[in-house]
Image (cartoon, rainbow, N blue to C red; front, side, top):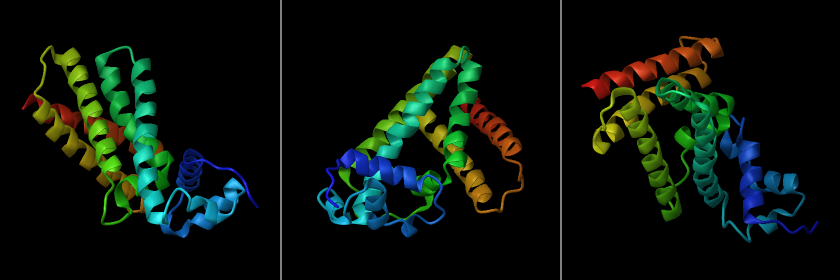
Length: 198
């Protein structure tokens, strides 16, 4: 069972298999190799352990999210719609891909975080902040301070993570997915706007 595979194929396959997983540790290198049609030892040519692969998928997930966000924001015609799309995109990714949400925010990956992951997270954070600065400036005509946007966006995002965590664990107050998404987006916009207006 020899088949030439690439690092990118392994990461894409792992992300695809993780998409709906309730327990990411139930996935292993053998299952990923089986899906790729190669021996699991081939994966060790690129990743020394499943933990290393988890860090790489976590890093790759940043770009998957940002690409979806870019596409959604480019379709919006007004700043108000952009702000709605901005927060809705988090929910789309998190609720539709519960395994990815677990990978992004719930799963313990390991003690030693790779530098590449830190850089990817920082780049994502800077890009998210810039989107919000541009949207807020379009809505109000005022350019907000970057440090304020960073704090407010972080707090609003933590609210979203909390709501989604409750929902995917079966403990949410709102059980209907569409109703939940609408509620979280409207609350996120409210919280964000309230903080931004000071």
